[in-house]
Amino acid sequence: MENLKEEKLTSQDLINIAIEQTKKSYSPYSNFEVGCALQTKNGNIYTGSNIENAAFSPTLCAERVAIAAAVHNGEKEFKAIAIAGFKKGEEKGHTFPCGVCRQTLAEFCDKDFKLIIAKNKNGEHTEHTFEELFPHSFGKNNL
Ligand code: THU
Image (cartoon, rainbow, N blue to C red; front, top):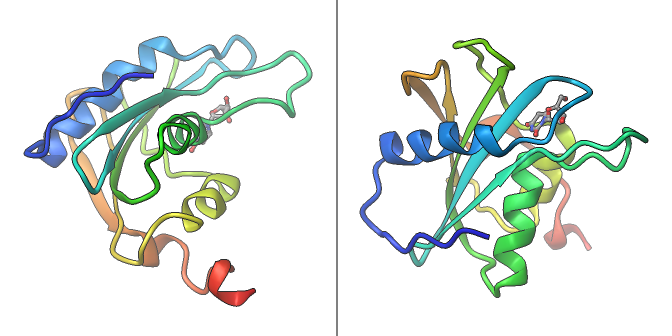
């Protein structure tokens, strides 16, 4: 777990951290390297990268690694996540969270939670709200 306390990080800073985290990806099966930086409402940053498995289904996405690290450390209120995913050796890629990660984020994120998605390793990116990516989600308010 990496814990970078810094409240004034910009989207550009977060995306640069996410790109750096792709280097920690364990992805010998897909050769697809994902890194992320999850910012909590009180300014902590939890990072993650994807961790694959020979049996495939136990594979963890980068986002869920970071969410697990945050929640394990008592943090459940999230402000933003930056995600960078590229095929190994490539400079471009625009990787959005998979459905399982969107559902996992739904447990902790408001509609205005910000997703910052890298377009390339230079740090160009797009920004989205959680509502835009996962409308009509099922969550604790439905139970
Ligand atoms: N992956 C992530 O880590 N996050 C995503 O949002 C999309 C997919 C990983 C899972 C797997 O290790 C590899 O990318 C290819 O699907």
